[in-house]
Image 1 (cartoon, rainbow, N blue to C red):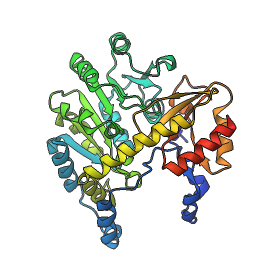
Image 2: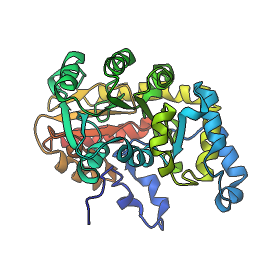
Image 3: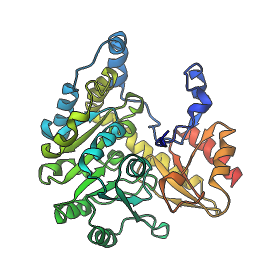
Image 4: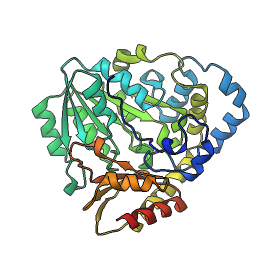
Length: 363
């Protein structure tokens, strides 16, 4: 059997993958995945709860027409530039096999979350090029070095996650636009799963009308608290969408997901408040974790990266699981990581205090 993509979620082992003990979820700290610490908008909860029997038993609109319309109106993007799917992962697995040729070259950042590398190494027959970002430079992209890597390798596709995971670093959109404009024959795929934590105005999704070689992947999971609903979309020129649109199955987004996505887009004020609270929680958590045995990397999102100067990430992760605290060993996210990096998701204030105290004792 081929290798499966690893994407965290070990905390379900502490609850019950068969859902027989969901009440245990209140005793589990699931900081190994980047689900939002806050609830979905009250508008989402109210609509789904009000029509719950209908939501569960009824087939959704076949191709998420209403959700596409809502995205188009909210983001000011033409409807024919949008394809939706059951989360960004669903869309990635449909997109790349249809825009990459056999033995084609694709360049990704290193570190970057591992699903992209999994697709290129285990699913497709392509040549993967890792553009390494340096820890002593806080994993910030150097434009000149990346530009040189693109020039020298001439990849068919370049993939950038912005803000990046697990580093939490944001790269100004003007840099990406400059690259996209400079290499018209290369397709740039930009994953903006966490961009709303910086500000939705920082998205480059509207640049797809100018550039036919730009693909923007958007997840509604992490910033709209809809991870369980599985909602994502791709924005690109129709010429690119046509390459993979037929590989998106009908009803790819559940009725719950479609309703939740539409309602979430209506409540920008609520979510902006949560993003500001997240910023404060993250800064307070980083301040509380200061320790001579680790290096902390600042972030713009709902997580941050920790480098161990001594000890083993796997040992720490294993010991914390005994306390029902789940953090992420980052080995799968970089060829540079050697059991010495941990990613921590930001939770509510009390939960963050529990994580800080437990981690400080181990350090």
